[in-house]
Image 1 (cartoon, rainbow, N blue to C red):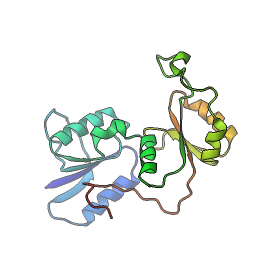
Image 2: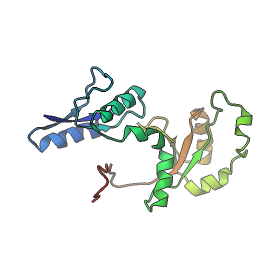
Image 3: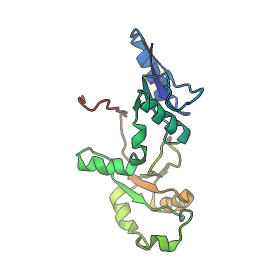
Image 4: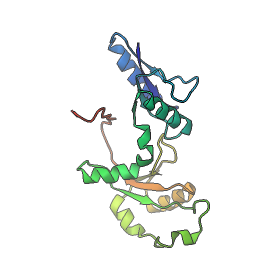
Amino acid sequence: MKKIGILHGKERSFPEAFIERINSKNIEGIVAESVKINKVIQGESSGYSVIIDRISQDVPFYRAFLKNAALCGTAVINNPFWWSADEKFFNNCLSTKIGVAVPKTAILPSYKLPDDTTGESFSNLAYPLDWKAIFDYTGFPAYMKPFAGGGWKNVYKLESIEEFYEKHAETEQLVMLLQEEIVFTEYYRCYCIGGKHVR
């Protein structure tokens, strides 16, 4: 029996729909389920042929589990070895260079200084930032969210410049993105497996 697992946190809609869709195909020898971990031993198989990762960006233990699983032959989507390069701002920058439409996005330094830094650590950063240019670029309403991570944590919908300044102060040491609002009628998640054919 080949198992397809989905590793997730409190999110339920996508994982449950994914499991239901795979299992509804009734393919002999294949079953989909939420990943269950009762031990992680170095160099030992996870028991899954494929794992879809929806949470390891928030849980370092899961990242280590997924790397071990990948080394033992499990196909892991999203690649756990790319995690450090897989943050929203880089992905948006890359998308603009290859012709993929993405919301207008600016990255913002943290509101408070990171631990073990001083103002001198930021001597290359202009004060104040060119807020007018940033706001003109993204417009309002806009979303402010961490440049890395997910799960709708620390995400703010902002209607005005005043609201931006109020909410930005709450973000403390998080590096944030300010992103134009895109009003959509449909929303899709796309996974590319293998990268050879995309339809």
